[in-house]
Image (tube, rainbow, N blue to C red; front, top):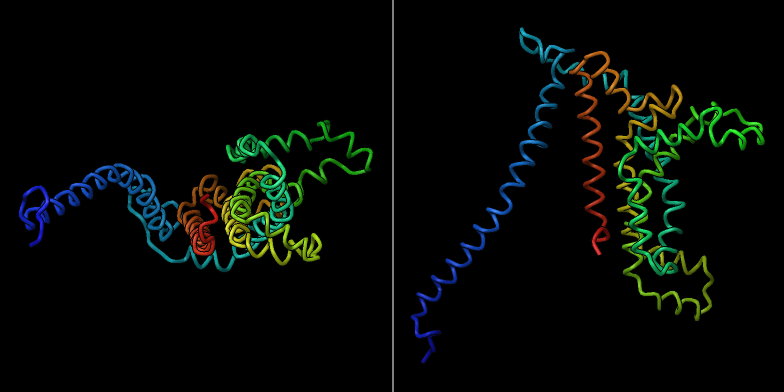
Length: 298
């Protein structure tokens, strides 16, 4: 004979369990609802607003006579402004390569050699507070008469040649996005057992072979996630090309969006460029989450 908990019939017990499960779902929904409302109102609704504006001509979206709809803006992006898209991708790719070259060794040292790594991670967060501060700081350092002027004079280099150049833009973008690369790779490396490196050394593998055959394959998810994160953040960089770049670097998509949308009041074309930038960022973010395989969470 089946025992009935607490002396209640089994149907009553089942109804009580279903009621508790329903109450838990309602509580969870009530907790998530405010955040969901904020995201819809202040993120997705403005994005839909921008997409709608991208199909209008010039500043007609805000004109008293009403918007004039057209798909010509996207045709212009793909024809006249395609070099701007390529410049944006080039700067982002170079910043990603620089971050990867310097980020992997730094992440390895941070995880394996530094004892108080949490303090180092806390200091690394500061560049993420704003790319504008980094760009202004580098501009002050590189300006004629700035702190770097004696070094440039000793090397026979003009300050303006360094200031308004692609290397200064890429370097500033790399500083801003460096924490993303280090934290992603560091999280992946923290999941790699150090005894595997010791075993490889005992079997006669040198440092390079241990890195190539043991460390890199096991930390590949963090490398992919960090590279895609850096690339995704770099394509939207505005302050670095505008303050540190030459004419070629100032053709990046973010600077062009500001010029057409804010300076020239061409809201339609500026919104179309913004949609293209958002689409690239969405694709990069999707693949970052798709191939990270948990590398972003310890």
